[in-house]
Amino acid sequence: MTTRRGRGEGSIYYDDGRDRWVGVLDVTEPGTARRTRRKVSAPTKTGVRARLDALRRELADAGAAGPAAGTVGSVVADWVNHLPARIKDPASVAIVRRHARRITAGLGRIPVRKLQARDVETLLGAMAAEGLSTSTIRGCRSVLARALDRAMRDRLVLVNAARLADVPEGTVRQSRSMTTAQARQLLASDLDTWWRAYFTLALYCGLRPGELTGLRWEDADFGAGVIRVRRSLKWEGGGLAPGELKTESSKRTLTMPGAVRSALTALRREQAADRLRLGPHYRDKHDLVFRDDAGRPMSRQRVHKHFGDVLEAAGLPRDWQPRETRHSFVSIASDSGVSIEDIADAAGHVNSNVTRAVYRHQISDTVTRAPAALDRALAAGGEQA
Image (cartoon, rainbow, N blue to C red; front, side, top):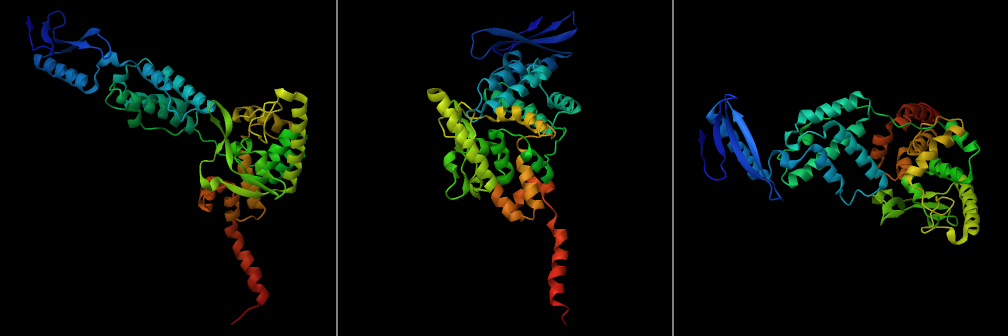
């Protein structure tokens, strides 16, 4: 026998075959005219009433119930298809999509309303056990969290399970720096004109990879003998172009060493020859120092693709990262006796505390040398009463 309730409250009946009370609620899926029937059950009539009440509250709070909200995979795909405008660099988009594929493979089939923090922790724990880096694990969790934020905005879920999940530590690859001998070996090797200019400027001046590829010829002032760091290569307006640096402290002017002047002069002559050779097919739009032989900007991906090959040809390990030329600059400068304050200025840090925090393992311990310096200074005057 069915117990009738008010319109929209559902109905309750006893199922002899299951020996349980069953409640039925008609649900209209949001954005459609399609109606579905949701069922709940419990050993007692009171229990079914409570479950129907909970289902109605869920519908009222989120505007959808159960299957209508979709799966974790569909929610992640929806966010990836509507990325925030700030995520436009091809490398960043590729990383987001890679994280999304990993999430979908591990959690994609779970109804998003049933996703729990422990499900997310299981996925992240498996990534850590696989030996993935901490940054990859955190990035994956971040993508899922932002996708669930969008689902909450659309009233598809009530709780963001990803933000409640604990994030395990993965592997951490410590940045390394070349020794002075390794840097000399690299610069003494048979580098082509482009790579010689790139490595010379990177090692002598400590520019970030984006600052190198975003440097324009007007920033290399041969008359004044300085390098002005004002831009970084970014993805803007559908293409790569030099854009503003992130902070004012990143803007700096550096003395142009003689080796840098020679390497840049050779590169400029080569580019002039390329321009004559290709004529109207030369595609230089931004007057970049580090462009390819057709005048086009050099993306981080293109630099990274050949970076290891060049190092290996020079007799060095090929697993260095482009950003580690900056670490090498800090290390070599510190070993050469340059003060931490001067290194911070050259690196474009707001103060030397940032330099210490980021490059602590590359900075020589000058404190231990202080007593020796004082010994020399005080000994020169002899003992005084």
